Length: 451
Ligand SMILES: *Cc1c(COP(=O)(O)O)cnc(C)c1O
Image 1 (tube, helix red, strand yellow):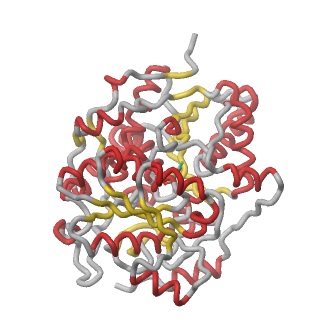
Image 2: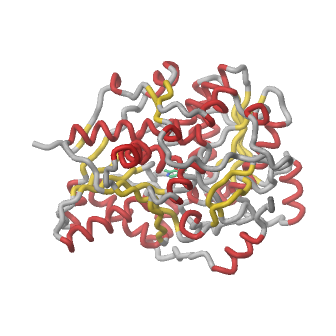
Image 3: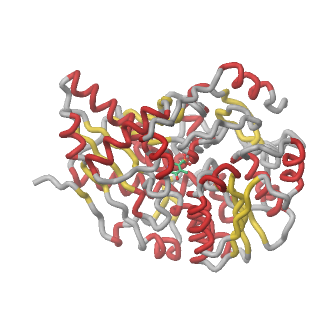
């Protein structure tokens, strides 16, 4: 009998992360120092990041060892299970095989703890006492507050104001783990005060919360900043997801025809898909890799591939990525973790080089898919992850039309048990779609930094 739940033992937690920079046909253009227009030197980043992470960002080594202290904490929930979605297959009456990796088993409820633990470890090792960060939907703040708690670090979280107001239980979790949580924009920082003076009613944005967290970290010796997505080291840490999945698929006896993930800043998708991109790049495997984003924040499908800041204030280096413009404030859609104007430079380069495909979906259709999935498989998915589910369902429906038994694999990046107000809105018919109007996009792109 073929298994429904494909598990690995703790001994099989990967010992190394996979660094796709060793295999990419083209590396993205380097981050630039906005003051000089020159590539950022590792030392420029020392005020906010530990050297251990800075060196991972620029490493060209294919395999980077996972420290024992990090693997020890990974053992709390890793290896994460891979499931064959048999009941969903039956519901869709499809000849396709559907598999999903489930990252919702982590204590944080999402993949984000994979990098939070690693980042807390390297900061602790270099004598840092406090970490600042931003959080949108609250998932990243939750993961980092847990990781800081494990390594005995203080954690300060700037939470996008609209989420702070709409998701009080997210704040409760962070406080359980000892974090200090502020609604952003806040009165704590120069940029926060400036924005509050200009736009007192603003719902806030991830780009703005990042500015506040960086400003605080840059101003204190004992404090560093931690980012939950986008950067090369974050993507690297998430490859533990794809590496486990590859082994589990091999045990199941199938290789995927299509690998699907949702994209906010690109970390869960990249961590899941890059080990398969390795096969595609180095062995010419024909696997399709599909990155799915919301039409309300269509960075990969409608953004420009160019240099932009990662935040609103312009404190970050200029990153070469697809962007909607760092001044873009996305509408308050319910997949809060996908509301970011840019994406991981490594992912963007692979999209530009056509190794990865990008697609966008509306929020109502993704909730429809999420409900179908929940009723078949019994898991309430995070609205972010529901983008991957919806695309997987569409692939399975197409397989049915074509009468093809293809193998579909997606990443279920987290559970949605703290997103029930979004489901409530959907079920009561209150949810609306917000495809980004072209004139709004052009307005934000017109404000891109000139080089
Ligand atoms: C944050 C989050 C995302 C989006 O972030 P990425 O960096 O693109 O992975 C997706 N799914 C869940 C469950 C999240 O919490």
